[in-house]
Image (tube, rainbow, N blue to C red; front, side):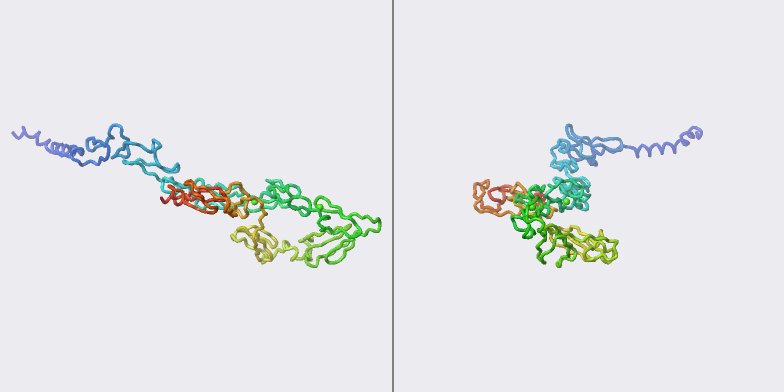
Length: 403
Ligand SMILES: [Ca+2]
Ligand SMILES: [Ca+2]
């Protein structure tokens, strides 16, 4: 008897293990018991030990638990900026600006950590596009058009570098004819004889030359070639120092006066540091640029913040940059520049002389006086202005972003 049951008793522990295992692995139907996480537009599918949320026919997956009818991101129906990431959601979509861009997703702007100077535009993360005339990673460097021979001034003029651009200034002996052409070709000769600015003495005759003049003796060998000067008559061949400017030396030659700055020989032992500040090598005479990055020697010049600055014996002196005279109707100072340039479009012009006789018709048919401003109906972020008969409208980007 005992023998008969012995085998069963021997297998009993195994049988218990089998029962326990089948109890633990017995599947729970989450779909039937509402214990699933399936959400919008899905059907719950029970699986051994788990479940799955399948999209309804024709619907598109959003995540493991939900599906949507329309994929606006894939269809190009999203309102996301080109620089945004579109995420499909159950009822629509989400727009998030890509890394390196800032904004609400509908409008994203590239972000340049250190900004773009001189009116540059941040076009992609930490990449600035500089306006013409500027260069550098942050558009911080002015292009020296004169030094780099990028431009050619007419030979009646010489090149002067300015922040953001350059200017062809008439050489001495020439003056502008009033048209102020950018390449200096409007520089014409000064007629020293006609304008009585010559220095020919009584016994010689003034002859006008391009950029200068000559004194021609008419009375033969007796002609002195002397020069009348505000400091007294100077004889032909005489050299003298100016009373008002000890750094200049003048000479009289055949009735004409030539003045020039004394040459500086920094190696010489009796160099006049007042006239030759560039020879001053003392450390106390150096100047620090406003940014604190560059050291200048005495006598050096630079442009900072639309000012011409000069270092003299350790002291910095700055004065407003001299801008070329413009004769055009409309001009504007571009962002980052110091001097106005001529512009054709009155809408971009600043510094307009408003003529009240030149009125504008707004879209509603109302006559607006020059310089009047009004909001554009239906566009709360657009303001229009009458500029001498031209309607100029502009959109406030910050307003757009906040509405
Ligand atoms: Ca320049
Ligand atoms: Ca002349």
